[in-house]
Image (cartoon, rainbow, N blue to C red; front, side):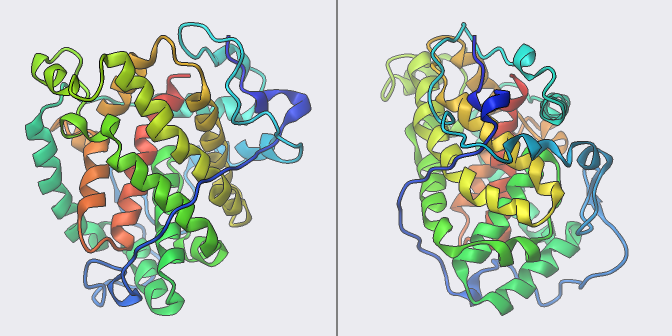
Length: 350
């Protein structure tokens, strides 16, 4: 039976950890992959894609309901976070432990409602996602005029590739994992550039990890063709599943904690993604001796509503955004957003 340490009333706190790494990024003149000179500036109107508001500062009803979700992370030492639980059943069983924890329980319940899966994946889906992603890049300014204008403004003002990349990634991740919109300008100005190399290295480790990229970013245990390819790196489906959770996702979850905690200074809407990221870290640290295959299969099949109709999983878009060059703020935003959706599959399964 798994009970995350930070849910104990006597030990409500957050910790962070991160690894080292280098950062290779284009000069500020190439921070945005598209020509943003024509991006519309701020206006009083709102536009939405797939039902999501893009007006900066706009808070959905779901955000208002969960704005205080991170209050459980205030205070306390949080010394137990990051340690593998001593007792665990066949899978993470958090509902009972989350009861009575107020807004955190509500955030996880909302996460469950947002989980939607697509059908069986194949190599053709991987190629199709890369094509669709090119359209996403071209349409970003039209679909998200406020965010696009903010990134264009920051590229000219910051002259700091690391802070812009980190801010764009965290804005996208918050949108993907918690469905909250955070002002990119406020995020980038609060970010510390020294936090980015460790996070960038963790992202690079994830998108290049064999457990992620094998079979073109596909995880289909029932497909004999993919099973044969998987056997070249992993002796079993369970081995790849555990490698995905512990080797690819866990370092990313740990590296996310520190910069996400800094976002709490931006506003109350940032509390929900912070708390969910801490929960994700505890999930990844668990002993997945059983139950990993089902959870990882869900992570590889979760998708946005629009892409679900074409069976295009979010993980394919993570890889497409990462591989697109030059990798500017728009690409970092998409990497973060789709990674947040992938993490949602594990958080909502609690």
